[in-house]
Image (cartoon, rainbow, N blue to C red; front, side, top):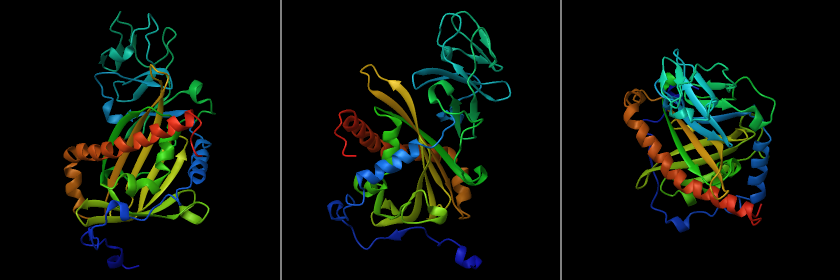
Length: 337
């Protein structure tokens, strides 16, 4: 293929032939078979995680204060040492149980606000650290007592485009469901144009694991257009895979933004005051482009990140409702799968 043939089109936009009413698009319910989706979810749940859980955006954990999160009922505190290394451990002070996440950090030392006990990340007075990992975009913690799997030294981080050529943003939201319900939502791309008509049109699932081998096997290949405004759309081909029990990755294979990824991670929090499960969705969007003008987007990254998070928030407003509904049906024995 010549360099000219590899060059992306001058304009990524395409004009659809005409407006199509929402109710006139092709139904996808025959293709979105409950058994097919449930089989994909079960296959994802069977994959190893090494007991690693995503906490959130790595950039949200700074040098001056600790950050707390509950993971599967375990109180976790995270902070950074003097060299910027991510540290994690139980969130309760070993002295009298004070919330360590409320303590200040000075020169890498976390100090309890109740009585001044100081922690540098090493074992102390019965307090044992948890393994932690910063992959450059997300922060992870390993909880062996929760995961119950053979531990891995580091999490299985999906392949991403190299940071110098990307713009990345991380969205976080919480829903009343379990991680598998979030995974099921992402492994049902057939709902995209029906449930999110403000973002997607002309969606077709063209490939499934049983129908195609080679590089794209083990996932769902989707042709879809991102709606820009009016009849203007950006068509792409994307691959959905589930590399772990709580992770689904969408990677753009062809079209504008080729190589860009959207990672969706689901971390269990624990039950709410009514006994309902809660799950936090951490979605990392890593955008890239071969266009020379993308350098301007990288320069404007601080302004673009809030817009990227807002777009993800709008989608997850609907998708968390989907996941919560799925959990309600499963918990009552009414789920069709």
